[in-house]
Amino acid sequence: MGIPVPSDHAFCIGENGDRDDGSVDNAIFAARFAIGGFASSFRHCEQVANYVAQFVTSNLPDPDRLNSMLSMGLNEILEMAYRYHGADGALNLLVKQPQSGEEGSSLQVVVGIPADSAALAAYDWCREQIGHAQAHNHYSNLVREGFESGPYKACLVELALIYRVHLAIKTEPSRGRATVTMVINTNQNEQ
Image (tube, rainbow, N blue to C red; front, top):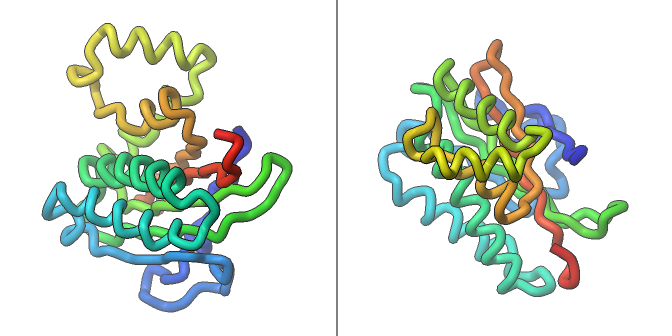
């Protein structure tokens, strides 16, 4: 889909807590969570997603639709992060102002997750499923085989293939990081 996956410089808080190079001047929301604290309760996923969605969409056109889309999509990404993450580090969350482009106006959400080898494998698996040449047919076969008995939860795959949310997943084994970027169209007449 051609969604750019930003480097960690897209986050306003660097690994040592310092401010980055200013590339988040168009951010609506940015946060950093210690992964241990975030992953201590599954409820954090929904709580953070709902708060961020309400905060971000309050001044946008069609806030109810965008709130619902952002809350649902971010919750799925955070649930994946809850299940698959490294033992140490921070979960970074950035939501950028709507940007106009060739496909209209869109909101970009970037979630950076500390990832051990098992977590990296889970994110790589999701990226492969989403990018499969016959993704929808492949997804149907996976559902029939029983996703829950498969190697990973399918939340990101479902988000991309069923709800048609634009996702990009990047893994960096040398840094122990995974980045999930979600783009939501903010135009009222387009999905």
